[in-house]
Length: 94
Image (cartoon, rainbow, N blue to C red):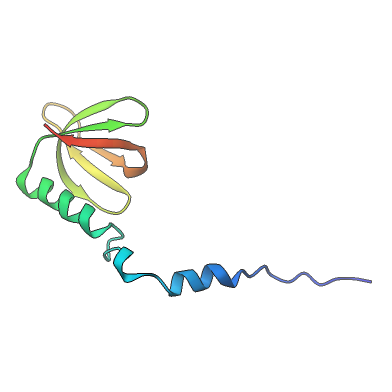
């Protein structure tokens, strides 16, 4: 007796994606609205910040660009960096 393999379908996952709570929704860029506002303020004002990575490295500069996955840190007298958000432990204003 042979069994045919059927693709695995988990309807709960699909349903969760289609019934998201609007209060927790993200903007079109995929960044949470409060996070986007804060990052936009930092970028507009070119505020100096300190970025602490999970690896322990620390970088200083200002945010020139960001999206849902990374931020571009512009530094003085050093190469600019694209830093993945998942690698950032925290950032703070200088």
